[in-house]
Length: 183
Image (cartoon, rainbow, N blue to C red; front, side, top):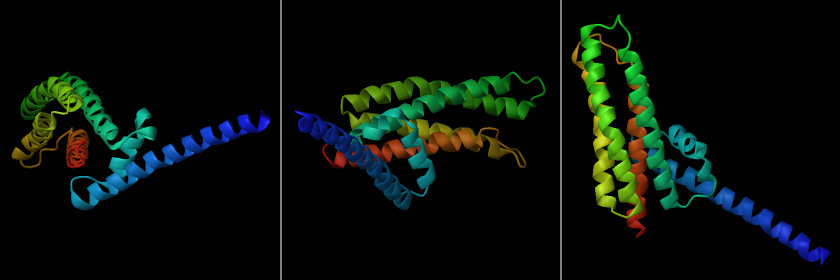
């Protein structure tokens, strides 16, 4: 009996180690492929973003897709809040205020869009989820580009827009793999 309980303990530890390292390998392989084939995705950002999510340690490829979509949701929600805080600054000039208002609209629209993308992904309506996530990616680009219309203007949202862009690109890339694997 003692040997049997030792065996089950070993088996449990083996499964935890194997599946944990398999998920880590999945993240690393996936991110390596994405960063190699998609110039907008950096390996470090991809791995650190996906590994930071609690469920990523044992996720399948399809699970990584949902994790990446959730990361977009957290990002756009937080960015919207940040833009609202920036707009409270009484010393903000007209140009920056008007650009931030456009970004606020874009990120406000992104919240229901990403919720819809989550539903589409869950029901395997990948084409719809692709369109919805692509709209969020385009919104981040539009927000950032708005600040470039005036020479010398600097976007206070460059890092956040880039994060939204990369998270969206990761989600789209994962979704493409899932679709190609009949996910």
